[in-house]
Length: 89
Image 1 (tube, rainbow, N blue to C red):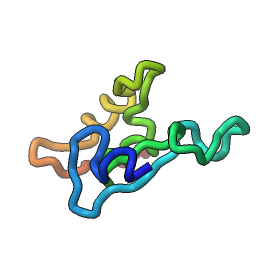
Image 2: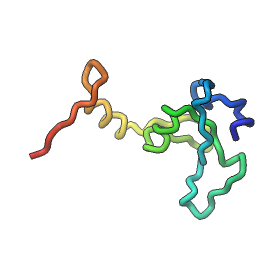
Image 3: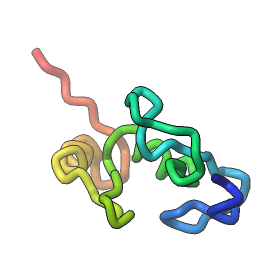
């Protein structure tokens, strides 16, 4: 998978040895495979975003942003980029 993507993130082209090979269809799904066509190379940031379902891909391999999750994330970050924890009572 890394060779197929020239060791670059499929989203931002970052290299710098911060690239992981990820399954497109998760291993937990019965129809997942370890074939290269079921893999994508992502930098650490985009890999975490993918794992947290902030982004995904459609059948045309276009990036789809999960708007609800992104809005929730925006609501928890202040103007300086710090996460704000809202205590529930």
